Length: 312
Image (cartoon, rainbow, N blue to C red; front, side, top):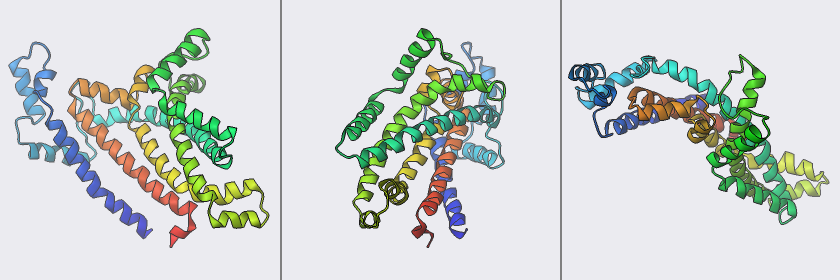
């Protein structure tokens, strides 16, 4: 418990540094955001109003103090385009991306970890070559290209799945899964390749250790040795990589969401950047950074579960 409290406290300075960095880099963008938001006519009265509303006429440190003070109270500002609170927009888009990330990560785990284990156990065999070939294909295939090919095959040619769009699982679970299966596979395919390579490397290192040889000498079955003794001790780097990849998915798979027209985090960020909607960009990046740090904390806790020696 004390370790968990220390880790939570250590996240606060990191989150503060991220907020300063995000706000500072946003302020360095060229041009006057008020003129962009004022439209083509650029009425001076509208520009002056936007300067006052967005605190653009005040010093940068004071503008940061306004923003971080609101963030600490749960107020991330208001979108100047939609006139909605940023927190409301994030609450609308985050479940969509979270569902997509969960499905993609489940596909990646179901493919990558077993393929890595089989490849390591059968090192040098046809299974090893096949798994490495699939991993190379997954690492080399651009997500947007694979997405377009899947749309052409499963939507245009076969008519099995919708080409784009999103349906809430609370409205129609079947339609939701049909709309999410292709983008989830596109994202999970690339992560599965990375997981396979890391799982294979970790397993090869563990399979040559003394305790594995001892387990085999005791007469345990090969799969008992592999799954109970080797894989459990090889999970640490896999957990680390999985937390990072899941954080990447939660931050918004921009290209994939654009290809399949999924209204998630990626589309929200792209629209906000093009519209110079600073409050939305800052809020999304802050939430994404928080998700990354939370996932790293969960990964640290998972280490303790899979490796009892760390509990001391």
